[in-house]
Amino acid sequence: DARVTQTPRHKVTEMGQEVTMRCQPILGHNTVFWYRQTMMQGLELLAYFRNRAPLDDSGMPKDRFSAEMPDATLATLKIQPSEPRDSAVYFCASGLGSTEQETQYFGPGTRLLVL
Amino acid sequence: SQKIEQNSEALNIQEGKTATLTCNYTNYSPAYLQWYRQDPGRGPVFLLLIRENEKEKRKERLKVTFDTTLKQSLFHITASQPADSATYLCALDSNDYKLSFGAGTTVTVRA
Image (tube, rainbow over the protein chains, first blue to last red):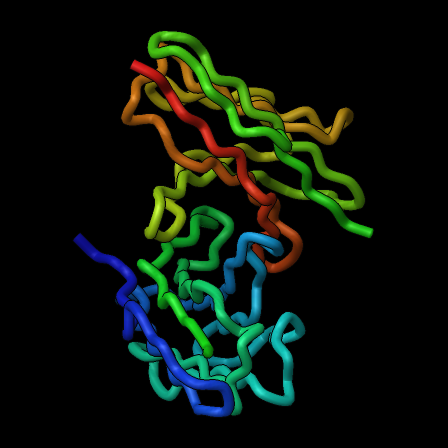
């Protein structure tokens, strides 16, 4: 049963520290999305890759957030330095990115708390 | 500005009844609309997709309608069960396979 995996599942850190979240998309999926979910803002798209190339990161605070795909099996989201307002659940999702299959498959999320 | 609005209140219904959720949108021209289910502590899970040229889609006890004139989708859970209790999110394609999500409606089915 193919699924998206994310690590860590939970992270507690102090303000100013670097946070790295990792995602392994479903094998064969060519689109990868990073979302952030909070009670106030709901699910927001941060960044989006196709075939490992970044297509849109307009939802991301550029000064502190960065997203990369070093290879087809790994996507990373980094926050440096982290701030309390970054506390949220971060989801990775992957998909086939085709007109026949637009579904996104979400991972379990990384719950981040910045103190 | 673009907006997606779902039922603002949580929905509490009796087991066996039909739950109806609404998703209204402004300033989008989606080619399709999707519905996802999210359980506490988990990621959203895809349920149904309906395209702009389709009026209705069904999957087991779920039914979705899509009215591009009204800019509205309705999501029905028939013969509801306590296991249907979750948050349901509607999502619109905004461009190039990106999705914009509504805030979600939390459904609680009482036994």
